[in-house]
Image 1 (spheres, rainbow, N blue to C red):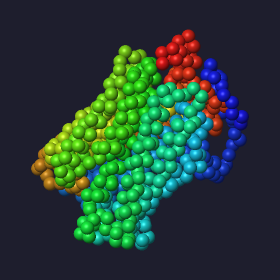
Image 2 (cartoon, rainbow, N blue to C red):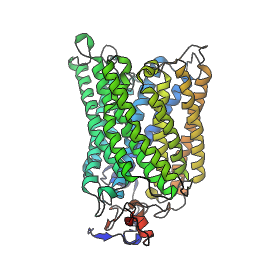
Image 3 (cartoon, helix red, strand yellow):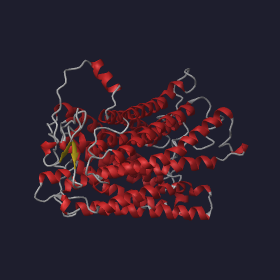
Length: 565
């Protein structure tokens, strides 16, 4: 197909009618997906793979909550409980959060910057398959953990795998090795995808799309992908060192042989806390695109939003040791990490105020994407406030091993990130499939999710404040924890029901949903200018843009944005 350049003077100038393909056999379709290097198909495979693991991780969470719903619970044994929270944490971080956000980035970034594909399509396919292999390997430990002769030997060292729990003497067999190798492989895939996204954004923007005209989503993915290089590398090094400890006796983390268990904590949290921002920045990216469209206003303070995103990226690399206040690092280190943790609230606060300013005075449409975005704003604000509380070292010393911390980080991971992932599904589903998701089911999903979320994680703070430790498989009655744990467990089940409604909506709407058209939300960025679903090459002719909202310029030639930028 010839590559030509067309100035954006009308939607039709860059619109493409999808080519009708002859009907394919199942094996032909399967071969087509397995061998594809198209960024859209790879993005969708990332998302589908993550949804499967979301259901698996959710089932593990429900098993834990049933066990903790009443004192002296006997639903699972202590060893099974340890396996459940190890697999749940590892699955949700490495095989749900990272891949689903990379999936959206894979699909959207080239479309939003006017490119036809990622910079390195074959590396893109390799990154997906190596990440998928990591997830499979983690669950293969169920049958391979003791050498193919026994089932049920999944890793039970927690998703943080503190030393010396991972030493051979405490973790015999191979389940911990499968955990280590699965994270190594997913890390290699993440670095490959991050390299592709950075190169694509830097080198493949369409004519006219200067950095100061780039959609905020692309800016956020540029920052996030750059952070992946810095954060994943120490984790990869630590995993290799752990394998060396386990197989050739190198003693990096063996304190009895001169190693250091604290060294593992540093390596892990140098990855672990920036990882929170690696997950939350794409959620911010979705909010940056959805809130303006459903408020019918340009985003407030574009330069400040870019500066705040870059600032969060830099500062997030200097906060990891606030997870280690109770270790005894010394007053100087504690003061530094208290300060750096608090200071990151400044750029984060800028983003919240700018989203509120975007909404203020707008003509708000409370469709499903906007409902989830509003829920995100409210819940992320509360999560930020409890984060500031935990950044104070004396407060953290009291609660670091309690359910208060569990409630705090689930407020961020579920209340902010998962809510914006749902918003992104409702917003971009019409572009991907050509059909709208059901608004009625979307609202059921939203309200059940809100009720279940607040039942679970609001009330989880209380037993934490009352002294309930995390990572325990049961507890004694009479400590004031019973009623709160029962409410928390009911809330988790309500969230599971809400998620099933969402999955049903995804499948039902694909076959029965209203036909969407190319631009159902009356949006302004480039992906809405092409067909739904987009053709293989995205754009028949390379677009040329003149402002941050190219479709606004087309729809309103009497008042284009470039007059004000």
